[in-house]
Length: 132
Image 1: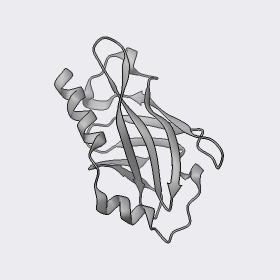
Image 2 (image 1 turned 180 degrees about the vertical axis):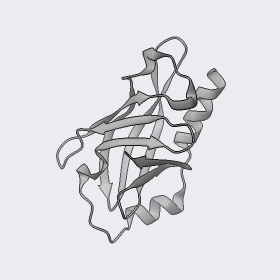
Image 3 (image 1 turned 90 degrees about the horizontal axis):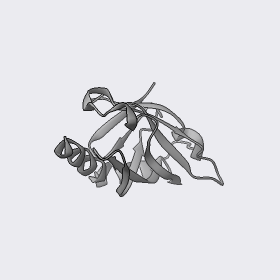
């Protein structure tokens, strides 16, 4: 199970520079709060709610469902993303966290969230999250 968590952390830390550049330099109109909402990762079904992001505040992303990852119920409600902060265009940065069998969340790195111009999905590395 720890290998699965490690894989997820690596997946979150992976960066697709082309997606990041496209999102960062997007000509679409974005506001910091566009990232707020419920998002579901297309492969695992991991569902997170990002909230609190605004012009003058950073937000958090809490787990509402672990999908096929099989995380214990203790992981639900945990901070998967913290300090979600708008950068520019369709791009946000956040600290990603990994859940361990010990029942604790640990900061595992920095994640770049690259949103599509239509605001219906974003990527963290190769993982695609769609708005619910």
